[in-house]
Length: 175
Length: 315
Image: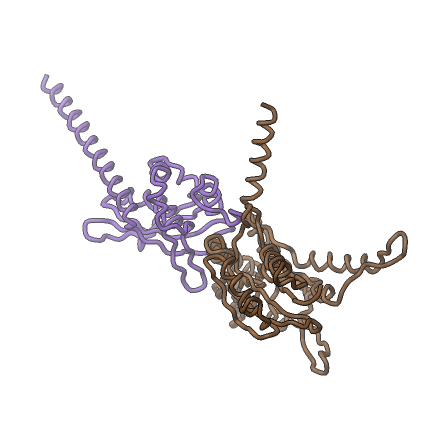
């Protein structure tokens, strides 16, 4: 009987622990999404990508390293559409794909879906170093981690998709 | 019912036709600096003064790097829905056209094709926007890097509407051809961002053109001749004010013999919704001057989408 009670208690503790962990993970994910919307990430050019791709390093923040690493992919696509990134010696920076500063608000429904969990943004992330983050790219800033992940984004495909969806104007629009 | 459907179809077709502005042509041209640095220049005697001009034909025949660079740029621009004119092909077409014109005779009288001196002068490879390309392989010891500049120049206003350039990362091992390709890939998006800004401005404020008004020597009138108390030059300026987008133009030069209007912003479509260019716009000025009370016979000549000249006094 005693043994039975102990095993039930352990099971309960395990379930509670697991639920708390899942909740904390979800909370961290939500926080990371809010950080993305608030432009709280940093982008630097990492190299000249192959034709049609950009190779960038994205620094994301979260209390959980796994969340920051995963969020880097979303932040990379977000930065390329809305923010652009500066260049460094030998490699040119790039302006954002959109020139309309209000596009995020004007097409809110589209972008909410686009950047949602399992959203279309992942289609354009071609390669990352999420499995092998270098030691110098993992930093502790206060209570959070700041993690840098190299991400390669297929910009040609991303631009084409956004043009087809009517979000971006193509170069030959109007002619 | 059938008639109604047919009318709707015709209306739809016409409206879609009207909604497109005239598309500017773009062509990549090696810059004079590149031609000079690589020895692709030829000398000619311009009335006693020796002048050097680029020898594009020889450059295209001898320099594989140039072909690779232009081909890469053409390919990337085509991917963006903006295929470019290929300068080498344009030059070949012009050469074969000249040969055919020289051989062409009419069936009945045996007369050849008429070509005025001005036609001959204008028979060159041209485009509305020139992408001027300069590149150089820099060497520092064993390291090689590429200095690359791409300038988008509006052929009529001479304004640089887009630009991209810089020096790439030095490399010990990479082949210069690979570095050149990398330079194009790295810079082309910035160039296209500039081009997009230029097109956005064009749709918002109208196409920018240059209009010249001149007079033939034998015409007894001039631009100071008065009609109803107003000088002809002022009458033409007033017409420009009324017909340009937001009255935007500047009179850069004004004498009794000529007028030069620069930064003339013309609408992309006329009142009936048809796409217009410098020719379409200036034809209205031509009609205005031909009609009473001015009744001035005049000749209209245009250069591409953006430059027009009206010569008063004759055809």
